Amino acid sequence: MDPDKLTQPERALWQAFPRGEQVDLTSAWGVWARTVRAEVIRALLMGAVPAEPGRIAALRLDGALISGALALGHAVISGPVRLGHCTFDSAIDLSGARATDVDLHGSRLSGLLAPRAEIDGDLTMRACECTGQVLLTGAHVTGALNIEDSRLRNPQSVAIQANRLVVDDDLIAARATVEGAMQLGGARVGGLILLDGATLLCEGGVAIYARNLYVGARFLARDGFSCSGQITLVDATIEQDLNFRGASLRNPHGDALVAWGVRIGRNLALYQGFSVEGTMRLTGAQLGAELLVTDARLADPHGEGMRWRHVQATTLVLGPRLQADAVIDLRFSRFSVIRDDPACWPATLRLSGLSYDAIDPPLPALARVRWLRRDPDGYVVGNYETLAAMYRRHGADASARAVLLAKERDRREQLPWYGQTWAWIQEVSVGYGYRPLRAGAWLAAFLCVGTLVFGLHHPPPLGGTPPPAFNPFIYSVDLLVPLVNLGMRGAYDPQGPQRWLAYFLIASGWIFATTIAAGIARVLRRQ
Image (cartoon, rainbow, N blue to C red; front, side):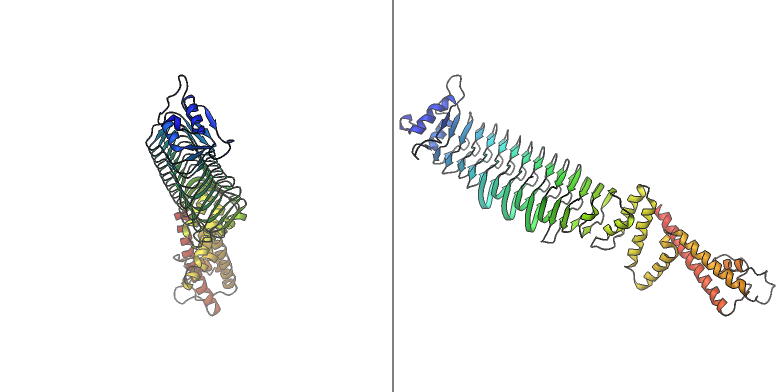
């Protein structure tokens, strides 16, 4: 590069570079006074001018119009690069380059191509506008990647291609607007990912693809974060929190959030104005603490609902101020504690295989049975057994029995007519074994009736051996208790209505003996 052929702004940059001084062209008048050829910048960064003794050479240029392609593929750039508030007419090429800090703050870009680049420091694109792709596949940034307040536009395609990107510090995209997909598959971020207030626009597509993403701290998409399209966090690992406070996810004709197998060290928070329109899939998610869903609206016009199957967490919090216009599917999930607000129960809950140690508030047993009955699968025996076991662990045996009695009553509705008849007999007689005193009351009543009727008119004795002296009480007991012979049932022969009463007492004795035996067996199995 011949220094004598440089324009005035290029000469100023050429002279400032060895001393690392800034050249500010933002107030220069006219296009000519602000234009710097990309080849001049490339020559400086490739070592055309050495640093002055005792100084660090650096490119610091503000407000320039950069003409031509800035091709720095596989270059080794020793000093920091700042091209702030500049306008580029071609994409910047840093493919495979090695650089220190790169700062493009406030610039207007046609694209940034930096696959496999190694940047020892920060890559800053804060408040930038980019009308092409930002390509960071396989790149390594030892500091932070900052694109906050930027507008990156590549509609109907990929706006940020950063699969296998490694960022040792934070990835900051607060208040950014991204039109197009953001791909972070296999990326590793040592600090946090900050998307607070950001807007992602990928209608009907995958707005964030982050399969196998690793985040060393928190993933924050809060306070006005809005996503139109699908977020994919399949098999991602987030060491602390995944927080969607006040966020809005929208993909009404498909999946809004897909996080199969996600591992979160602490909380998944969907609260304080969070809303989702579309399916949420958290199957197999593992949380170290809470799944928090409060002051939120869950809607799914697509009809798939909130598929939170096989989720493991310490606590599930549902409500208050939860509006669920979708099925919440908790099948085979495991929580130590469920905290919910009965006023916010979804109309439909799938609970098969759900397990928990405690529910807060526990509520009366019948209220919790109504909770179970919101399952569209209908009668699921395990749901009742799990709830009863929870009450029993906390010493509420009466509530546990009430739940199990409700289980039998709901089961009765599934039986054919003859099965329902037998079930009704068990219900009336002994409460399916959970109301054993009821059988004693019935037996006492029948014994009193028999004693009274047979006491008023003794049945005649049978011929032959002289019978024992008649006792109406003992005679009634002999009729009621099967497999026991007190010597009176076969010695007297009741006539007319008394005969029918005797037959009734014998039949009742067998029925009560069978139902009591079934109830005792059920109690023993329960123990």
